Image (cartoon, rainbow, N blue to C red; front, side, top):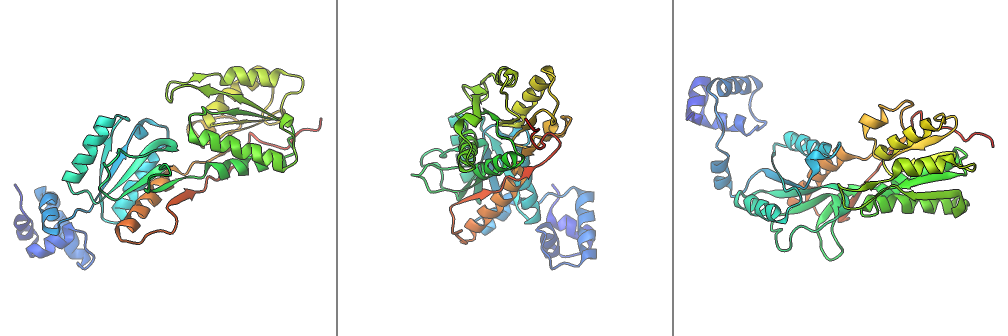
Length: 342
């Protein structure tokens, strides 16, 4: 096995200099860094992280515990955000996917504790309320894309679905739409409830009656195995004589089905019908023609700022707010326009 002494000999420097380069310390001349890195590449040297941890009694590793995040569209950007922050701040990331299974989650906590993981980012695949396993969290932990129940006190960072939906509702009404359809997400989703609650409040505050807002349930059932009625509900809603001039969907995948229903009925988008979604799932939002007006979920920022928040907690810089909400910006594209005169 190649040792630090072997690298030092090939590079013509001291063992301590090799250690400083391997630890990415800043007080080494760039030419020396290049020379040491060349020797490391040539010899295939790998630093002994375990020994380093034992000497310092701590690691520089953040653990990531996910449920199904790696298989969820764009939520992988949360992990990418964490990794980018870690690279910039000389941290290592160790990730474990539990598939939502309690036994695997419990095993992961034990593994992280055994490896002296410095802190944990608990990442969920969809916005929801969650508590890590009781008594399992003995490592500083931040919840990402979720928040704890009131009885638990974990720090958390999540998207501001409510504000994003508020901005979307105001935009649609400012375009002059007074007959609005809304196809809502599965009520089991926290984001679904926040989005529809915000939309209804804006409708009331703007002086529209509840009769001006037609709400239909598009999906229902166990998460990941829902019954989907979106196309059927959109078709029925758009077939009536008093059809809406704007149709807002709980997410972009629903908006895709609304597009298909509208086109099948011979409606032009946006001339006859404004359609808007939520998430900014770009495979859909940019793939549709015209491109979809939507609200973007800040997946990458959730990861990046979540890691930043965990680091602040570890440094004892306790944030004033236990829960941080990140903006969900409105993205205006070609599927929305002013309401046509009746």
